[in-house]
Image (cartoon, rainbow, N blue to C red; front, side, top):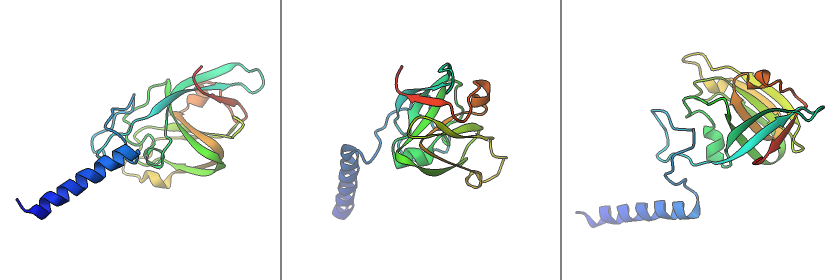
Length: 177
């Protein structure tokens, strides 16, 4: 075997191991409720931490709904979002945290089902809700844009906010309860 080929393989293996050790690559861990569909573009499935997200009525403090959310806390996880997910159970969601409040635009890239996109300010107030239906067959989901302002973005099933009577101005509590 050619020594240069062996040396090249050793260098690539060392870089992959260094990336795993540094946390730059996600470990090969199955995701809880977010299994990749066929055609997964990445070689390694993403691994998510989870948290409970509770929405309460701003006026009464009554709990309106609660989901167990996967936390998309890296650029790669934010970019992928729910696009590699075949379906989303009613009591699940995905939470996208940011370091500070700002303007963001979410798209329906690779989505096979509709979602509600909920923007949450730094103080926990819902600032915007979008009902984003599944893009039509063959449509480019990147062209379906849903802008808003928040420190967090929560994605849940389509019309979850309607079923739970959640409106802009209600409060979101993040953390296990």
